[in-house]
Amino acid sequence: MYAERIQLVNYGPIDHIDMAFPFDGNRPKPAVFVGKNGSGKSNLLSHIVNGLVAAHDAVFPYSRTIQADQIYKLRSNAYIAVNRDYYFGKVDYSDGISVTEIRTLQRKQEGSSIPATMMEPDAQIAWGQIPLGGNDHFVGPVKRAEDERKIRDVLSTNCVLYFPPNRFEEPAWLNIDKLNARAEYMDLQHRTGHSDRHVIVLSPLQGIQRWLFEVVFDHRVFEINTTHLPIPPEFRRDDVTYPIVLFDGYQGQSTALYEMALDVVRRIIGQTAPVRLGIGPRQNRAISVMSGDQTIIPNIFQLSSGETSLLNLFLAILRDVDLSDASLTSLDSAKGIVVVDEIELHLHVNLQYDLLPQLIKLFPNVQFIVTTQSPLFVLGMEREFGIDGFGLYHLPRGDQISPEEFGEFGAAYQVFAETSAFYDDVRTAVKESQRPLVFVDGVTDVKYIQKAAELLGKSPMIENVEFRPAGGDGQLTKIWNSARALAADLIPEKVIVLHDCDSNGTNAEEGDVFRRVVPKQSKNPIQKGVENLFSESTLTEAMHHKPAFIDVTPEHPSTLRGESITIPEQWVVNADEKSNMCDWLCTNGVAEDFGNFHVIFDILGEILD
Picture 1: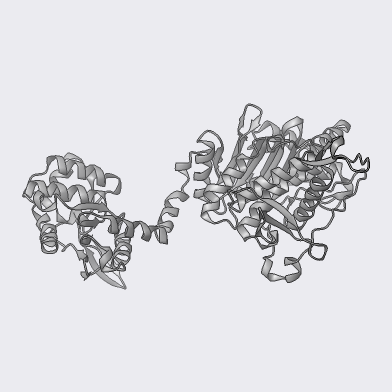
Picture 2: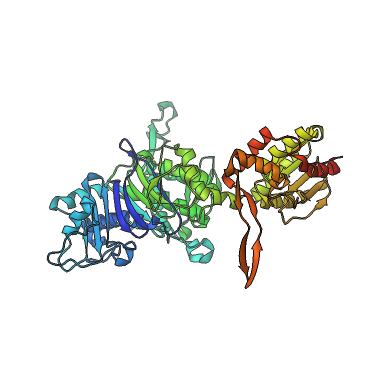
């Protein structure tokens, strides 16, 4: 069972979406939905899950997800988009299964006509099914008598799971009884209209532990293979004819499940050597993870939150398929749909980037429909699946985008630049440098300095100097803090952190690490950045070539705290033209244009001599 198409119109922040889920032939591709908080990610998933719950409850009335005659997903005017008079949603699944819902602001009266803005054919059909006096309607998956049998057949051979954002396992340290929880036999009920499988998964670890206990038990007890060899006559004593029994491994359905579960567990705990599951004594039926005779994890309840989250997700898939009527011979044979809201919950960045995409790839015939705010997870999916191996959709519009278009990448870079990894990179660069290092604000600073050296005869001074752009004034401050913390004997060459004139930094030095701020040229029109070193005549010539290089705000009056003041004319390099202006000046500039750069060479000469 797979989701094939979803339509949403005027639903919360979502104006209009009509998208087909991605497939490679008959095999589903993972579908990843991204977007800021409030962009509609959970809203979209709610329609998919609503259909799955409705299908489950229709054929298993004695193990319903919700009470009879109640609904899983609320229909309310609050979800109708602002300035709209209705919302509509429809999800089409494989095997001809679909669910539809519609809600209007106004109740349907005798003689009412379809709202003029309702252009979608499926929405018009749904509107026609709203009863008089009502303003909403839900069309479940069972529309004809034969639908119930078809849905039961589909659900009995497919994994159908939803992991909401409030899923959670209590930590092992919270309750000693939970830490020592015994693995127990499952209490399955085999009766018509009942299912031991549930769509919504909140805290499944104890259920998984019971399932694992039975898998290991069946594997060890019922699926052991032996070979019987007769004792040669010359070695018999007292005409004993008992054969020699040789252990010949394990084989069977439980053994296959056991090996699949081990593969998942081994990957999650990062163990490269073969592992096995151990069962504790009767007094403590804990399930442990072992490698050879060494216990690696004494109890699966002792896993970290991130490891537990992954264990819950992927072993729950195995358990659900095992409890179905499907034949699970390999991870490839597992089929179905798994919906996960905020899939990166509780996961360290390494797990998001490396492990989570790898685990998803282990189940190529399971359709994963997930939401995330993690750019590293998206980047990991691209690395594991390739850019065409999964679908990435940006809400609220639902446009398919590339990983590079995911806006959170830029924000994430700024965050990660503040981590220890950033400092480690700086320290490594300093310790391994074979010549003096000069960190400057950006790439254009490097180009300008190198061109100025050429025009002003300073090339010999910097021919053995390595210039590195830092990515902003704040990054320069971090580099200064990191480099000066190194022991003096770990710095083979001098390190200079060179700020532009508008920095709040101050000149300082510690050992061979120097911090300097370029003096501001107050007479020049641009007051920020390296471009402060260019005169008005040079900048005017550049603007004659391309006016877009510099944004000019004329002098104008203003009021500050009740006093009238005059704001002087301001020149600012256009952010989109910064690199273009640098290229033009470095190509066409002469020594006179770069004359003020002597202040930089004075700083470098003082330190490097």
